[in-house]
Amino acid sequence: MLPRQPSTCTPAAPSSASPLQDTAHPSPDRLLTDRSSYIAYLESQLERVSAACLTVQSFDERLEAAVSGIRVLEEKVLNLARLVSCAQQVRRQDQQQGFD
Image (cartoon, rainbow, N blue to C red):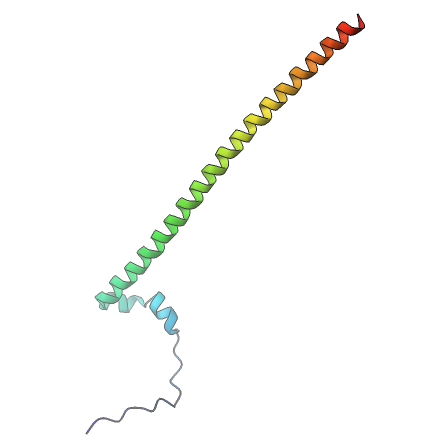
């Protein structure tokens, strides 16, 4: 005869950790005794770190592109300021020659 199993309709005793937390961060005792759990945990950590590295790399590339664009714009502004200064000098010279 089969042993009697508890009914699924009765509430289970409340556990201190939710099932989602158990899969994300298994207890240290379980990791030490269950090799497959430990390997799965390490693989999930590796995936998280790899994803974080890719995110950082994409932000780094975007930041470098933004810095490069800013440098180009700074150069253009400096060149425009030089052009305005030259135009003002030419105008002053023309005014002085016209008044003489």
